[in-house]
Picture 1: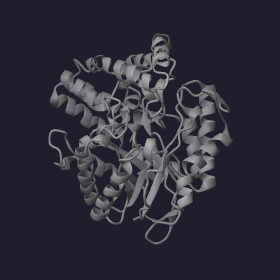
Picture 2: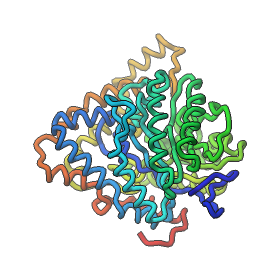
Picture 3: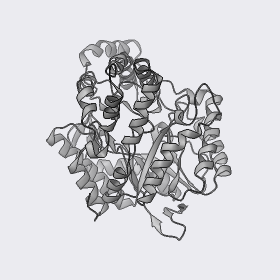
Length: 459
């Protein structure tokens, strides 16, 4: 079992371990750009259930969980030289809103399966609660259908998360291949006054349930602000996220300018130094919980994105930082491998429509439907010139509310209707499009990672 010793993670016999791997996004916490639906996960599941009915919707989603990650996937990651997978989890697998504080024991089934598969191939797991009741941040990846992070406003939601983590920690307290717990992904507490005391309370509860596993704690404002920590906790890694501005969908050339900011290798290193300052000053391990560019299909642009990634990996090596690349598998934007087959044949045109409208926050260039939104931006600049909403300001907030929430939710019925009339075998075939054997591998990315990790195994 791993533990923190100064700036390093060590095994029980004192061997240093630098955790390097991927995030398993889109699996136990589904995301719109990863599997192709619009909006947030719970709204999507409801829309699909209304078309398929409860039992047949359950058939599809259960098959998707089984196909999305198998022993073949674990073998691929091990062959690349990785030793860790960060597993995002939506709380709804383990607790329901209509029965709060009641743990759904069956919800551990797939998580147990994948943690054991990874362990059999020598990979640690970091369990990441990615979506909390009430939503801990303002965006889709916390399964938030609004822009309000109600988690920080209601003690009820916080009580439920403490109780949920006590159950998770009790379940995995003796598992040697669980590296530790990442209890709150990318908190977005606008006041910055609730998250620190909540961490104090949560850490105490987790330590009582499981005194040995490492805690991986994200800073506020999406794992970038560490001023919220009021004390140092033992056996803890403070986690930063380190997305490069030029690597976003709206990123410019690299090296070059993106939205008025120059980005090159030196700029990447300065950004990493700023985001990891707290860890370095406190002498705690460096671990980047999320980072990674998105890809466009344009060879020239993607070549620049690979260069961004290569530069970041070299910087992390220089500082001895561990990392978890986002994300392993999707429908084409960012994954190491990408689904094909019946799912893309059926949903491909709809995914293209989403791209044209820019309704996925993570895949948007911020220029789609720009002409339609321009009058609204101008109106807000004129009538509310001092408006600077948390976390990213007026332009991003307006896009989030109009394009990524309103338009995205308006498209949900169209997505769900694509399931209508399908037989059980056809539903299974859709889900099985995510089997590794049916995916396309992003070979330049796999080659880059294999070289960085010094892997000798064939994939």
